[in-house]
Length: 413
Ligand SMILES: Cc1cc2nc3c(=O)[nH]c(=O)nc-3n(C[C@H](O)[C@H](O)[C@H](O)COP(=O)(O)OP(=O)(O)OC[C@H]3O[C@@H](n4cnc5c(N)ncnc54)[C@H](O)[C@@H]3O)c2cc1C
Image (cartoon, rainbow, N blue to C red; front, side, top):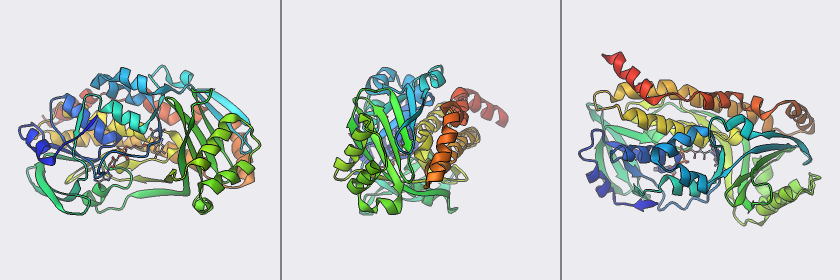
């Protein structure tokens, strides 16, 4: 559970820590790093700009990359109980007919779990043992004060002064539209904007609770993904086409497909019935450097993902896990070297997954009948194994944080 805690209480708790860490953003990356460091006896200060954590929620498929987070925190059973195994992936034609189905278990189960979970449920799991966070708080300014220390001033949502503190490490984990990125680096990030957006809605679980299914239409995209007890629906299209609103867009999609399949019908109906579904703009962002003079960027703040490969949260959590495990070996004198080693190992992995997502987006977010037909021809031959090849390689080759940290320390001496 997230425990709303005054900032002064968090600052006082970390006064004697060997590393004073500030984590900005209590999302997937921020919660992972804060909880991992707390498990190791530190008291990182965790803040979030939201007044409370009432995110509308969406579905996440988590690659086996994240399993070690739950194992290290002793909460793997809680994770399994709150999620559902994703065993199959189905692909439908632009008219809604089934084209192919692949086994995800065959591809991924040797590496660990591949499960669907709601974002809210994942927050609950990660905070099973309690999690202090100061809400309605963000960073107003950052100033290096020498010796690797950064002075941070905090503000609330109205920009009113909320205190200050000094930290050995400031972690910008504030998501895709990161303000920390603007404060830490002047260089504009590289952005891929697909020009598409989509709504998220929830449908009943239905009968096929282990099947993730996608329909790449001509000018629309419909995905259905199981989480525990329900199905997450994503219905997207070119931004201009969505201006009619979810109900009318859902009706237009319905008229463009032949399917009478209950799952497809339920998904379209769920979007049409939701008076205010969560709208997600499909763009990503890539920052050239993660380790910066006043702190580091991690998760979507460093490399934000398109949804196409379902790996953004997985990579954010892996990066946070890797960093927190490496920090077991760090003191103030070795911190800079360890951070550089972390970026050297982790950034190419994340960028490789991001490139895979970008490649799939080029196939998915395109309009035109001819393109739809060509895509289906390709998809008949292209297995999930080939489409996600680079990501499966990453899953199979997770780095060893202790070895990377020890290598970085040995290189100094
Ligand atoms: C609809 C949808 C479906 C997705 N599906 C998948 C999937 O199937 N698999 C997968 O692996 N990934 C998926 N993703 C991507 C995944 O959600 C993100 O990659 C992941 O959440 C990134 O984690 P993060 O901690 O970097 O950012 P976030 O989880 O976005 O967390 C950022 C946190 O920072 C806070 N914050 C923002 N600004 C500030 C500020 N200025 N000061 C303080 N706090 C701030 C926010 O309130 C939030 O709590 C999906 C994303 C969406 C939107």
